[in-house]
Length: 220
Ligand SMILES: N[C@@H](CCC(=O)N[C@@H](CS)C(=O)NCC(=O)O)C(=O)O
Image (cartoon, helix red, strand yellow):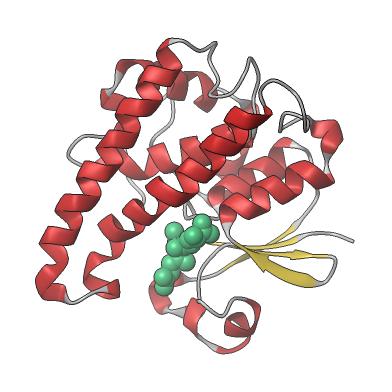
C-alpha cells in the first residue's frame, strides 16, 4: 500500500520526505497549509490530534513524530541500509543520536520558533534565549563528533540520523549562529546537500536557498 505523507515545505516532515525520496518510494504527498491553520482543522486533526506535521499513513493508519517515522521506515525497508542492524557496532551510537536529536534539539527548536505561540508571550524572549543556548550546545557536540568522523554522523555511511540532523541544521539558518558556523558541520552539510535525493526533495517541496549553489535562505 502506498504511503501518504502529510507535509509542509521544510517542516518536521522534511526528513521523512527526504528519506522516502532517497529510497525511491512512490508516495502521495499532501501539503498541509500551516500558515492558514489547516493543521488544526477538520479531518487533519483526526489524523494528528496535536495538529502537527508530519503524519504518515502506513498501511491505512496515521503515524506521527518525525524521529519515530525515520526509525520505522528504516525497519520497514532494511534493504535501504539506513540504520545499523541490531547488534552491530554502530547500532548504539545510531540510537543515541536519534534520541538525542529528538529529545534535546527538536524541543529546543520548537521553543525557538514557537515561544510566542506555545507559551505566554511575555516570557518568549527568555524561552528563546534558553532555546538558543541548548541548540548551540548541540552544534558544538555534533561538530566534535564530525571532527573524528568520515563524513556521516554514524559509522561510514548515510543513516536516518543524517536526514534528521540536516533538517534541523537547515532550520538554524536564520538564527544568530547557524549550525554552519561550526567548520566540521559546514563540511558535513555541504557534502550531504550534494546528494541527488536532497536536491530532489527540495524541488518537490518548492524550497529555495540553503543549497550548495545558493547558500542563502529565502523560504521559511
Ligand atoms: N516532535 C514533532 C514536532 C512536529 C512539529 O512541531 N511540527 C511543526 C512544523 S515543524 C508543526 O506542525 N507546526 C504546526 C503547529 O504547531 O501549529 C516531530 O518531530 O514530528
